[in-house]
Length: 405
Ligand code: FEO
Image (cartoon, rainbow, N blue to C red; front, side, top):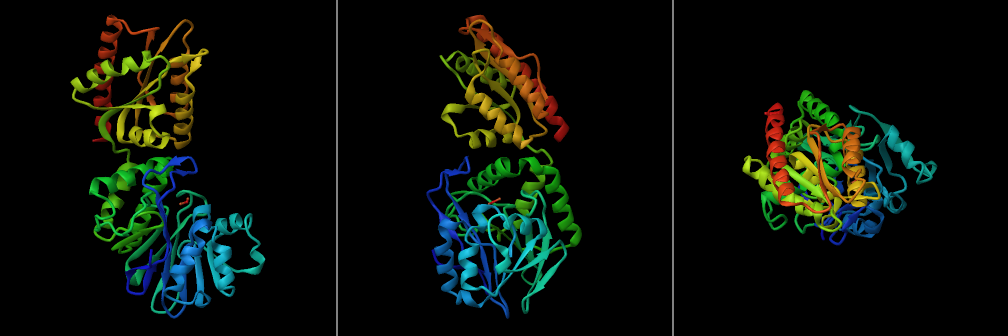
């Protein structure tokens, strides 16, 4: 892939990772990209690097435009491995370049590299770097999504290089939101934005709201948002900002995700009447079997819905392992503004549904109780109970959803 010019003299010099499917445990069925940007000005500047496996590719891309030895500044917006682990190879080519990084970024980077050999400038929000006709403004965005994270804004270009913020895991041959050789539809791009938010940024909704408000207060004009993963927004950058504000404010569909696993299909058999009851109440519903669905996709579906029903059989008096695993992952994401119930089958002692509620409460979700349990196999009466539970849960979800109108 050759460099792509985003603005006059500003190039994408990143790499496309078509084959990655497991991004530190997060399923990436569309692959991803590692975006970084080269700015030609009096003082040539590189914003961000790429994952080490792709260091030769970004160097080749830089070389196609300019001799890397001429780079004067490197901005490191974030020190996670997918963005910083080619820094040593790049610095070997431009050893006199100055690295601009947040204080926490520098502290973290020092755990991976010997920084004594490099020129480092610690920057904070509001600091600038004039490189010629352009001035870069640094905006710290701590915990979006690491303590070191920051963004870089170029006023003369109305360009926000947003690091992980507004990213999406999409590998594509083209770079922009107005090029649908990349995403087959607007909805595919929106799905990828939602997926990324749900799995990476969900815990930080309150910070996102504040940071977007800060940007608005600064009156920064933005006509392009260039994240470090996926598609660059130039057609309508306001749309992704609004999507983020909506998600941070708890927006969801009026729908329920039934997320379950099953041993001998009894818990699974409960899902169909539950779904019918929910749908008959006019609420959307998706049924997601955990062993058939990557966890990160189950989280995205959870996030899109106002309600969730967790289904688990009892195994050795506790939850089925795949369900426990899912709830552990969900707990770390600290979801808010969702209502949850639980159901499942058991043979003698039971215990899984009770344990599911304990975790749902620890997560801090609103819970709908009691749960619904079936002995061994759903009978005709049990099937009716499941349907009625679906109706009642959907009613509760509709009522709860009004809080977010
Ligand atoms: Fe794309 Fe937080 O790294």
